[in-house]
Image: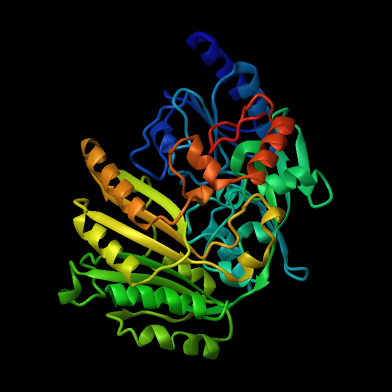
Length: 459
């Protein structure tokens, strides 16, 4: 389409839509196009913020009929930049935040413009929770569709293990309710297969009774022995305990003693979702590792999202490189390799994150959902944050070498993938999972309208 034709079509869409349409000439355009990662700087032709599913379907029809690229945004945290488009249409679900909680039956219907923190705070008023990720500002849409690995993963599984049903606008602009009995092939695919199959507008989740947790930050001196011991203790712990270890050079944080600044530390985010006294006992092996700072305490579950204070509005890191994969063991040699590569980084901030898995998520058969990595033991994410784009090659080389030193075979969590190519997407969905996803894609999106994602092209 020519520019004038596109402009006329967007004007027509604005006139008939229930919701906001923001174009480059409108106030709020630069704010509206911003996503979490500051390095992603794209200029869509329009940002559309619908308020209901009828408007969502109209935007899908518009994109299909015009041939314009369609980006679907829930929270805007896509590392690969899939939450926005250069010259296309951004369907931003931020104004769709309805939440209906059935406390008696422990279920909730949630629109996908909600963030993890918003949903969690509302559910906590009833003493209930659903597990999402580890960052409160992430939208529940993309997080859920990719799997959902967070603070309750060992006790209550992935987010998709608590997904009971979903409402989805497909490529033909039809609204479908999918669950185990209705469109079961599609329900299987959206539990881990990402945004390939439509626009998820509402989810029905299972809720669990969780009020007070024992959690917070535990900061340890980082040595090869401490890293290996931490992971071993986290694997051996009760399933109520989920742990994320961030190994990094300590910034000058006010709660750390001055002598720890600039030294390697294990900054652990920990959550025990169970009896408080049992939770306190569960931390004993970790406290024997002589923490530099111990901020683990009983707290309301939503507080886990505020450990670093309120998240800043607007874009996050200016530039970032990252790589993620799974490993089956973390021993002293692994710890030594981690510290060696972190100290070799020239970035202002570099981190190796280790998430101990297992528990409830591992008991779900791999073929039951499109998340096939049920038996993997530890998820690794490596990253460097820096300011100047011209430094990217050296940091890319660093993270590539780092990953090669630690990786123990293929496999990746799709929500932690950047723009890394088709081979890496296939690592997220190995073997029969990929073949099955391709068939579902061909049935529900044969023209690949929903392609701004970790894409599964139709057969």
